[in-house]
Image 1 (tube, helix red, strand yellow):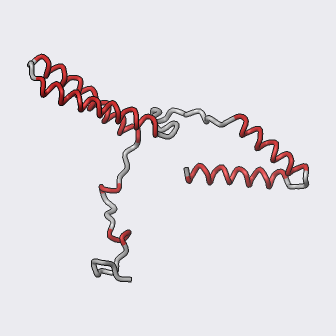
Image 2 (cartoon, rainbow, N blue to C red):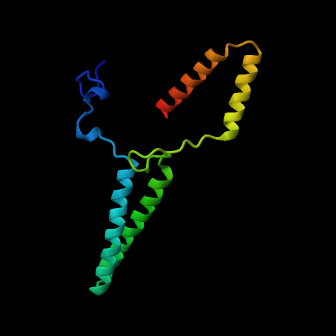
Length: 133
């Protein structure tokens, strides 16, 4: 297949794999936004002391955007992504969901299913869900 550029390469072959493909963790993004927030407050104070309203307003707007960014990053981060590295994050499993799963497993075992095989299957499904989440 030939692309619009005539090279025949697919878009994934043209994609760079170096520095542009690195991801920032929500924790790092949150720290950067927090630093901008603190520097914005300092800029507002300096602008006010220097009696320069334009500077104070500019840093005020920058601080407002940083505050919004801080709220957004915190709200969309998955559980545990903002925890300190090396700390264990408690698994927030829904007790009702766990009880329902146990009841269903019990019903299948009562219907003749092999309990060990069934629990292995459920464990593999949970493992697959954690890898794809």
